[in-house]
Length: 151
Ligand code: MN
Image (cartoon, rainbow, N blue to C red):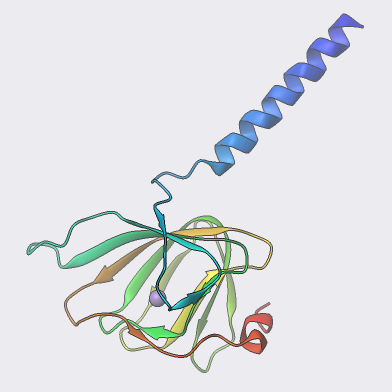
């Protein structure tokens, strides 16, 4: 009996440790974004300071389930390194795709696209964005139809 209780407690401890480990992201979650270029809750952390050597911005973004950016364009492109969860990515004129932890997404210069969390998962990536050709150009909101069409 005691042995059974002991193993139950051990099992419970193992599960709670796993849950904590899954919640712990590598970088701090950062501040909630109050910009008007997304729907749902998005946290942002800048990972580097602008400088004259690298001309690259590194930032982590975390999305609550269902949160997503509006359509937008990076004049010099962008890499997305997915570090947690499941999300959606869509380029103009193409079907949306499901993207997951471990995926590396290439957004080519000038291509309109959006990215965000799947409805039932939080979602985190590190974005590497060249700063050489100016800022992100924000376009229209992602419609419910567009969001729901991703599968
Ligand atoms: Mn983008």
